[in-house]
Image (tube, rainbow, N blue to C red; front, side, top):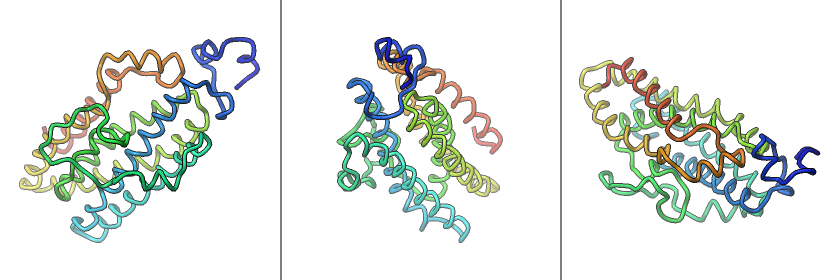
Length: 254
C-alpha cells in the first residue's frame, strides 16, 4: 500500500485504483472476497487436475499421454502457487489438500446450478465428468479459452501478490489449451471423429459458458470498487463466445 492510502479511507484508495501488497493492510471485507477468489481458483485447478487424470489412460498415443500427464501435473502445481499465498492469510495448506474429494463429479446429465455446489469452491463446470479422450480434448479447449480470459481479468487484481502469481500461471494454462487443440485437430481429421467431437461440444458449451456467472451481478459492482474485478461477466462471456465460435469453425465444428 502506498503513502497515498494513509491519507484517505482504504475503500476510496482501492476505488481509485490503489494496490495492496500484503495481508497486513487488507480490510476484512476485501480479505473475505480475495480469499473466496483464491479458493475458487485453487479448487478449480485441483478438481481439473484430478478429473483429467483419467485422460492419461484414454490417450491414443505416447505423445498424448505425455500431454495429459503434463496437464494433470501443472494444474496441481498452479493450485499450489496460489495456496502458498493463502497461507499468509492463515490457510492450513496440508489440511486444505485433504479437505475434499477433488475427483468427485455429478452424473453426466445432471443439471448443475452455476452457483457453488458442495463444500468446495470449484467452478460448476468441474462437477461434470469427462467421458473419453475426445470429450477431454473438447472440454480442455473450450475451458482453456475461458481460463485465458478469466486469468487476464485476475492479472489486473488490486492484490499485487495474487496478480503476479496469475501472470506466471497464465502461459502454463495457455499451453494446456493448445494441447487440447492439437488433440482435437487430430480427432477432427476424420468425419467420425468430428461427429463425436460435435456431440461433445454440445455438452460442454453451456457448461463452460456458465462459469462466467450471471450477466447482471450486484457482487460485480462491489468487487469493482475494491479493484478485484474490472470487466463485467457479460463482456467476458461475449469475448469467450466469439473465440470459441472462431476456433470451432476452424475445426469445422458448429
